[in-house]
Each structure stands twice: as C-alpha cells, then as structure tokens.
Length: 410
Image 1 (cartoon, helix red, strand yellow):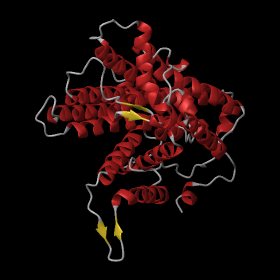
Image 2: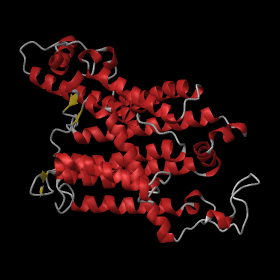
Image 3: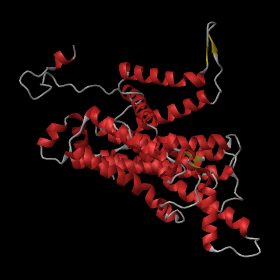
Image 4: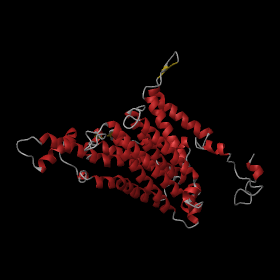
C-alpha cells in the first residue's frame, strides 16, 4: 500500500480532498441545490475559474516542467470552445427553427429546415450556407472528439515542425505567439466559417434543457469543471512522476546534455506539447458554455501571456502553484473589473480599478519575478522547512573548479 502512486504523492490527495470540499461547499450554498447563499452568476464564475486552473496546469507542464514557454496555449483553449460551441449553437437553433415551423400548413422538408438553420446562424455575416467545417455540427459525439482532436492535431503539426528544427528559447515563444495571432486573425474573417467577429453566442442554453433553470445548469457545469480539474491534476502528476518526469525536467534544465545521453528530446517535447493542447481544449469546451459566448478576441496572444503570468505568480514547476495562481488572479480580476472595488481618489487624479487592474497584475508579475521567483507555491517550502541539501564540502558540479558548500552559501 505504501508504494502506490497516491501514497508516494500525498500532495495529490490533499489537493483532491480540498477540491472535493470546495465543490461540496459551493453546491450546498448554491441557488439550485442549497441555501442560495451563492448566486448563479458567481457559481458560473467559480466554474470558469476551475477551467482556467485546468489550462494553468497544462501551461505548467509545458513551461514549468519542460521549459517550453508557450505563448499560444489559449489558441488550443479557444479551439476547444469553438468545437463544442458549434454543436450547442446548431442544436439550439435547430430546435427553435423546428418549433417555429411545426404549425406550418405544409410540413417543411429536411432541406428547408437546414436552410433555415443556416440563415439563422450565418445571416449575421451575410450567408446561409453551412461551411464544410460544420459538417458534423449535428453530432455531439463527433464534436466532443474534435474538442481534443483539433487542438491536438494543430499542436502535433506545429510542434513537429518547430521541435525537429530545434527552435528553442525566445524564438519558440515568438513562433507560438505568431501561431496564435494568425489563428485569431483568420477567425476574425467572416468567411472563416465561424461567424467572424460575432463568434458563437447563446452557448449557455443547453439543447433540450429549456425547462431547466440556469441555476441548475450552472451547477452541472461547475461539477463537470471540478471533475475535469481533478482528472487533469491526476494526469499531470502522473506524467511528471517517475523516469518520464525526470527526463522532461532534465530537458528544462539542460536540453543538450539530455540529448547527449541518448534521449529523444524532440519526442518528449512533442508529447508534452500535444497532451497539454488537448487538456487546454477540454478546459475551453467547459469554459465557454459557462461564459455563454466565444469570439476570436478570446484567442488573442495577450490571453496566453496572461496565462504565463498566472503560472509564474502561483509558482511554476509546481502543479498546485499553477492552480493557486490561476484561481487567485481570476477571482481578484473579477473583483477589480466588476466595479466592486471603490475608486481611489488621489486629489490630482482618481484611480479607477477597472482601468488600472492590468497595471496591478503587471506589477505583481514583476515583483514576483524579482523577489519571489518560486511564486506563491514557494511559501509551502518555507512552511515545510525545506532547505538546500547539506553537501559537507562536496563539489556542486562536475568540474574540478566547482563551488564548494562554503562558497555557495556566500
């Protein structure tokens, strides 16, 4: 029993236990199933926050553990949202169209229903024809597969081209940012097949659940988000444990040396890049039905930069740190930008936190980078009394001139 994966990693059990308690508390205080102490809108906010925690775990895997600073993972997040959004919008529109034509004197044909659905969805961009990418929009099963398949395929193609060329460091970060920008600019076009700048809307309305109040729908999505976060945390913890985790940490710290040891560095990096893209797609598929709308602005490069900031503040290289950073920044951002914080008059000017929140976030990132590089998660090291190992004068490196313990402490 002592050698089981969970027993060797008690922090996983602690995290899952806290997540379960949090989920139970929100459920008991929600309007749908409990005392009504938490509003439906705030339940949605908490559900979206859990989704952001999930993509933060993906970012920590690819950056904190493997050393790939990706500035494009929100592209995968958005693609997951678009894939499920296509089914939600199609089915909801189909029900409305069929309901409006049900009392027609002459029953409509299947083609007439399809044309009416197309007009309803694409009329805003001056079209009524379904693009090829909507071929499976009427199938929930296929669209759920596409939630992970489309981000995974994009990550596979991009990662294979980038890693086989051995692009690293800031150049790889720029490439991932360029990929995100190119995707966002393409989706802004009306002929992209995804309604251009209008995006997909009405996603909070589940097909066939018109009689179910939003309070209940919101708690369903909250449960699904909590379950996805728990499973994502388990998967990430399993990936970073054992020999595989040691290899990707080695790639992060000294890629050349790991390659000389005979490991396929490109293969490891590609696997992490693809699996985290899929995790991001799942997070997006759960996030946007709670947000109710998705448009290309959600995929803008700035979103991926924010994601890196969250992980840095929480503490990269620590899965729980990524969760803490994403949850903290998301909830504090909601508090500041929701107009709940009073303006700060300075006499010569007035600070409106809705406008100044991004400045606060940027300053927080700078301060954490300078004074607390381990992030908030590093505080747990202090609580546990973790210190650098005592080497008793042993060399701290392979060279003859390596620092000794006394020199390293100076």
